[in-house]
Image (cartoon, rainbow, N blue to C red):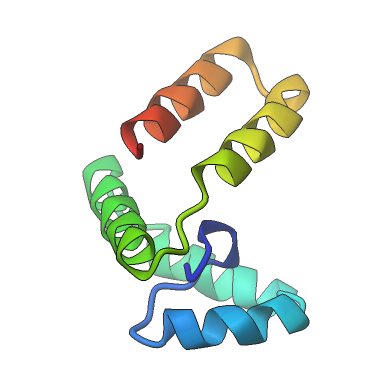
Length: 94
């Protein structure tokens, strides 16, 4: 995910990151990513997340503050349990 929110996971994610800022993500893009991850266990999803975060940190594109801001903007739409779970996951990415 050149950026986590772009759902990027390929080797060219940093190159695609610049391109993705100019292009909008389509419904097909979201469905493709959903289909890629839908049958994974929680453990597999966590592994994918941590691999992507490691790539972003290495490339200097990981933006913790932005993710934290996104979580806070979603807080009103989440149950307290879901919010706390997402906050715990986010804090583990520091």
